[in-house]
Image (cartoon, rainbow, N blue to C red; front, side, top):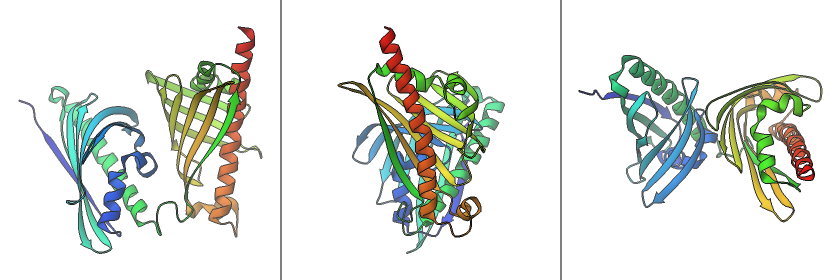
Length: 317
């Protein structure tokens, strides 16, 4: 006989219930809002229901699964059930439920029910630990996002930007350059150490040291989800002090001359780090400029070297 296990986590949020519900319902924004979520693809969408594939960290591992969600805006509830789980999970479901406490406060309950493969005790312990860890991280992140005023992005902490490079070469060569990060230590001047794990094909854990123009070293750790042969999305698990969130995407699209490669960065700044990092009198605007310049400079340098690599390969064919 298989055993169902249950867990419930809750948090009080100083924000209207509708605001909180909106953040939970907008699953495509989850990589920006929730620390464990790396990437989400919406596979199907109908009235009040959607089918999604999600990539997320769990106990320092990266897992992917497919879920069906039922959205009930009237009842302020989002139910979910995994269709395709990953071991040690045999089955998983639950719900987000928001209860208005007042016009400006809400109680959020996140419930889970799950089974482990073969009712294995170690599997049960692993899942319980992952559910506890992720639920607490997600609820705290939800609270911060909902309580941010006057709204996500409007306070200047959250922003997104693109840089692009045109390449007279094969899109597959550009993709290979970006995918094979093991070579970056030799290929990219601003990278001086790389460690890459790929236990599951196209799912990478990348740790690297990058150099700033003033010679300082930043260590970053990222999860990368690779979609051959046109897209790589990533999320930094360890960010520099100025950012609480840094997500990115490399996109390669065919063009008349060969292809266009675009780098997209999505950032949420850490307001408390602005003055300690940039100095007395620094503002959020200064931090936006600093981060945009630093990230754009490194990603553009990477794309220009990918361009050189692909165009050289095209000449040699």
